[in-house]
Length: 578
Image 1 (tube, rainbow, N blue to C red):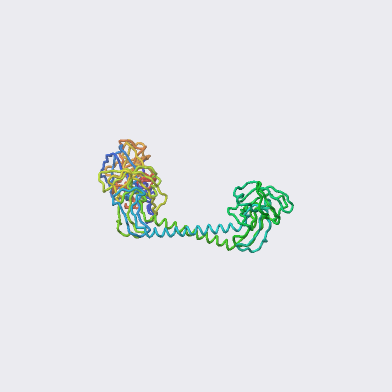
Image 2: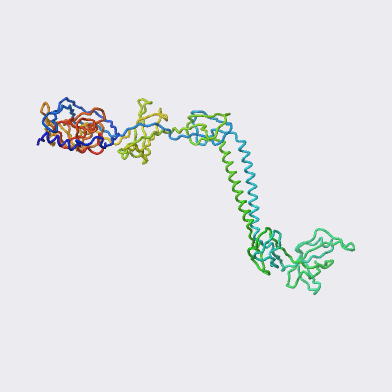
């Protein structure tokens, strides 16, 4: 069925937006570029298409068009861009201290390992400061320890095991250091000190059995020697004696007023003596404070180091806190001095190559100045800014082809290592940084400009047509002699030779900038008809805004009798020219 030319042109005007106000929103162009492997035979002919004006029958200007054969070839889809090479890692080595550089045993271009000593700076002043800090720390530690011991002295304990004879303070009393607070005595064992002839006493030994006779009752008790004096004493009449102490168990009636004599074997004492308690201690406070509580009662049996009285002291608490603060300050000062001393030895923070050396031995380093720079050149990286329309096609692990103007006839291989989601907007366009790693870097250096191509899709040995031949709505014009014309819709065109064309609906595959894969709708032997582009990489749709006429930029430039929807219809998403 033939279409009326006038109806066809009016349809084109409506579908392409004829009469739309100028300056309307424009679709952002995708920045894909495509490499085509293979060659297609393109037959260019110069034929004038006479178009009728939309309002009448007068022919418009003649417009040249092109035909091309549908042939098999390889079609590739890729994204390209440029960037600058960077080192895998870089570090500017600096120091926080000033001083004379003593050693700098490396040169530019040297390979260094992480931790290698690069510079040593005179640290004599820092060493002295560290020593002073150590002394202050030691003093603060002793002061804190003494204060903590004083804090422990707030709890008054029994110096010996025994019976609490007296508690000399009450809760709430103010106590001074050295004041008596209690008395503890061991009344279970009584000690008797008597003298024996010196010659006899010299043969006695501690633990030897002895008998004790009470003067008042002449009762005899069994005891043992606990102490023998080392010196002799001369009594009246030139009697030489030695003191011996004998311990006896208190049967309950012995007191310090009771006197007694003793005998060791057949040797008797030269006189009598009075009993004393085996252990009796007057307990005094070691620090001043207020009696907070009394832990025992008079007459109670206690063990050695058992708490008797607990004191409190606000002054002592303040002293402890002050000593603790002083100790912490001394520790911080010492740590800072230690860290600062470490700063006088500058080491390599990474493994890499020295790219510049700003200071040499004998020079004076300045704080916060770069001494040298190190690059890790084990691999290089570059960053591409990818358009928001294409970023979904990029994934970590994709292979990238790299070329550099500085290295001719050499292609490098890279890998996408990071696709950032932090986009950068400029006007209505947003781009996302994509990081690429290049391991084989022979001939490449940081700072070089390179071009990168990321392969997205490829189709080998497929039917393909020029990108400009695909119309909106996924239709293609073919000549009447094409095998696929039988499946198309006849479009009447007024040409010099009166030839008609057919609009055929197609299914596309890989879309390149120059060629598009045709999955179905066309076959080998078909010849497509289209308006040629004015420059490489631009198809008819990309040129709409530049061509005369109304109709979305195509206007009078379209061939008479184009299919309904023509160039204003639905180009596949992601197709060329957008």
